[in-house]
Length: 104
Image 1 (cartoon, helix red, strand yellow):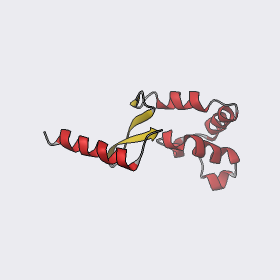
Image 2: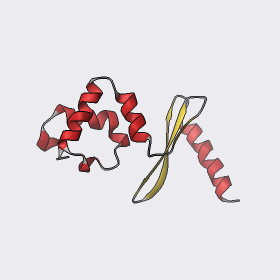
Image 3: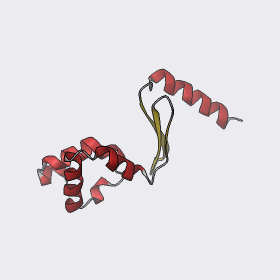
């Protein structure tokens, strides 16, 4: 996909706002595919698109509504936490538990 400033389309902003966290290589997205994504978003298909885009990524949801998603980039791996109940305090607690596990 070309630079959003060059395209001048509001659909590009919509895609990046709604799905940017799920697109690993947004610059590789063809304009035609970007238009199709925007059409789906305008049609209310964000949840379905997120499910499809997340299918190749490890994702778990707890019974308390916290979603954990495994991601990776050139710097390594990360786990994204989202949903109700996610707080700075909870993340600190999770990091302490991970530290304990890794030090065994």
